[in-house]
Amino acid sequence: MKKSMAAVLACLAFSLTISANAKTITLKKAKYLDKCKGAWAGQMIGVCYGAPYEFQTNGKPKLDAIRPWTPDRVEGAIGQDDCYVEMTFLKAVEDYGLDVTYEEAGKAFAETQFPLWHANRVGRDNVRAGIMPPKSGHPDYNIHADDIDFQIEADLFGIVCPGLPRAAYALCDVFGHVMNYGDGFYGGVFVTGMYCAAYFEDKNVEKVIRAGLACIPKESEYHKCISDVIQWYHENPDDWLAVWNKIEKKWQDDVDCARGNPFNIDAKLNGAYIIMGLLYGQGNLEKTLEISTRCGQDNDCNPSSAAGVLCCMKGFNNLSKEWTGGIPAIADTKFDHTNYSFNTLIPACQRVTEQLIAKNGGKVLKKKYKFERQSPKAPEQLEQWENQLEVLKHPLPQQELNRWNPAWKVIACGTDMEPGVRSEEFGKAKVLLIHPVDKETPAVLESEMQVSAAGNPKLTIEAASHPQGNYLLRVVIEGNTVNETNVDTKGQWITITIDLSPWAGKKVKVRLENQATDWAFEAAYFGEVKIQ
Image 1 (cartoon, rainbow, N blue to C red):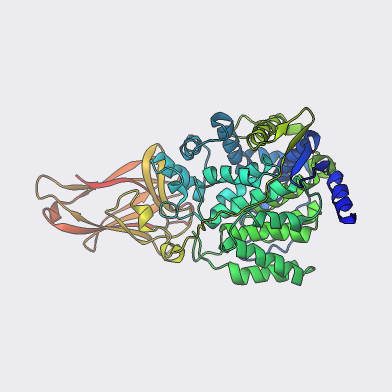
Image 2: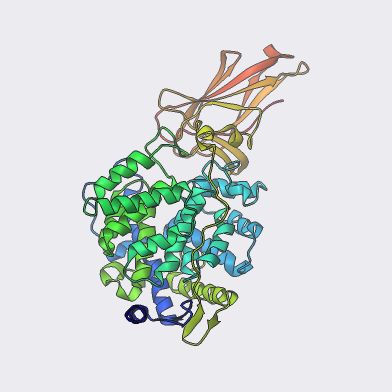
């Protein structure tokens, strides 16, 4: 009897009434709105808190001073992809409905014009090229499949699914596979699951974390990583650096899209840093932000996710004006690339939530929601990128290059500026970007090409440089340098023409070298390269 009374009192503490079957719950609309508002405010505060340090400490913790927070800094959230990308998903759900398909989600994403990186960029380029989800996020087509992208933009699906992790998973499955797979996908599902639970838990962060874990397979590397962090936390409750070092030793394996570089945007590694903030923050927002930021790597996305979950637990009205005081001044300002402002975002989420509650058998009443709370359930089929190390041995795998021209092979390439195939750059479709390995070592492409015996055969190369950089393009045929051009086009395209008459009727090995000059935006952009 005491146990039942304690449970009832605990539920009443956050305005929930649990019915006799222990599943049917009543959630007051005021409580929902407060927590929904807190979730978005937390994301905004977190991303702005960590933004000055984004990727400044890779493979090492940030131990020096952190800039004191002032409420006006939250204005920066208006232009942050941590916020506006997931609002693209919200708009797609509003446009296409709760049964939005892979194709509709992909189409909505493909139509966006904002800059993207890593898995998001490749996923969008894939869809634009006709490679639709879930293939667009699969490692066969996207070498960034395990990156952090969906993890930083899945918050929405937890925010609109209070107590409905299975309904949230259905939406994650559609949108998350536009750009991610495996651990990259599971990271988003995990974060989503935490939000679903945060509506019904005010203080116990570990309980919320474990609810998120219950949404992904125990066999996944992501689950194993987060489980390690929880265990190590209990072994070292007063020493976050000890746990950080354990994470670095076991999970910073450099099997990611930027091998050989301490930069690591792997979802599970950065997910571990989210959990570090929540566990060691112990419910204190400032401490949560500080620890998740100090862990390094994606120093703004990780505190954004951590603060979003925590502030959902707390509710907006329980947040100090020290943190939220800057929001009223921007509450009617639309987030970049969206039609949502903070003031219109909350009602939009509420509309979707009410549709989801009704779809899942619940009732939307005047001042409350009544529905059956879903237990988390991990997907039955495990997604895990089995040949990841083999594929990522090269920063630009052949499978990626084939999207540009399968006749060419990458001999050497660096990882800076995300080498790969772009759907469009500087007004030209299907562009290859490569980058020197270092200041002395060029990126190199090679191809064997048949030169026509008739006419005046020529090799034409469409090339461009970044608006803020230049590079030396060296053309080598059969071991002989036949052209050197300083490409400094500021984002404009030029055509370099090479006379192939000396090799008429022969098959020749052609080599293109992207040599660094002053080591600033040294990427080479190639359009069409062909023999005429």
